[in-house]
Image 1 (cartoon, one colour):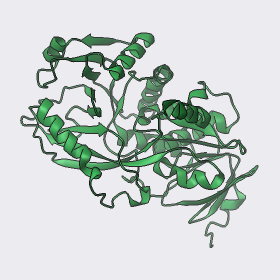
Image 2 (tube, rainbow, N blue to C red):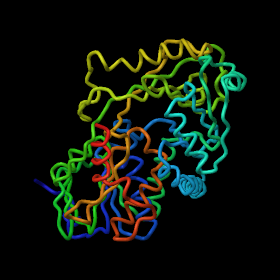
Image 3 (cartoon, one colour):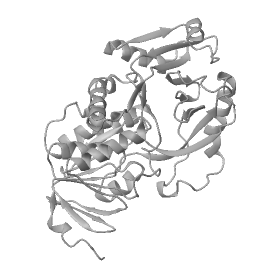
Image 4 (tube, rainbow, N blue to C red):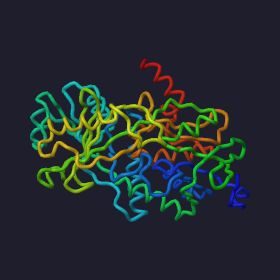
Length: 392
């Protein structure tokens, strides 16, 4: 193989981060800001819509099903605020998060208990209160609600670009259109790409849907699957009807429906259906999948027709992204059991974007041999495998 950059192999980086999605960009930014010589590698031309970090919006919230996620949120909110200040870019819109479900729904109750434990502002709604607060929606007579008042929207595309821009501003080296072909462990890790090869004291793998393709060859087999997800935009019958809405989760009998106020594309409300579909190869994302590939769209059409009378029931825009999911939908942050200078994070299961500042911080702490700011135990591969078995 021809390696055109003849000087690259003679340089030794403190850390090479593989994958410039939100987790990798956050990790690289953190490393460079701490003064470490850092390279960030991305296989596609930036910006792109091939992975899981593109698009205009993501949800941020305190309302999680596990306390250990919520306990990180104060620092996460502060980190996004600091990035706003550093970049002079508005990244967060506080809209509140509405949780909806039938009375006694376990998923809603779990999240209410977490909000109570965190002592963060929230408001529980009876069926009558739900209708009074949100007359433009039609929820069932046995539906209850809860508003996580700190919930809101992260401007995803802007968040990603700010991390990357600040990374470069702090002296980081960013290479896009450079695909990693091989990782060779050792005291110095060698990373071989389609354009060159590089050496580093540590490597952080944040490859999203491509994680298994990089982790498996070095002896790591996290139980992750890649799913193609459709996100639909439904046109308002009267523009602005849902522009002041909170983001929302509706714990239906078959999975979470979720949505955003109609601001991504003014006059159109973004909705998705959090459910697990057929596994795909991330390199074949756009190949048509028969049958189940449209189940989420059909679900959302019926959902909108039933619950949102102010929207046209046929989606005007359909966009595609990928989830990388674990069996329990918990994330993985861990290090290689043999080569401690290789760390990785994957399996974010559609909930990882908001966590990126802390994921990046912890990966840097691990890469540089420092104690992690939060207990790593819930996020290790070993813990995930144990929880997966307990669910069987």
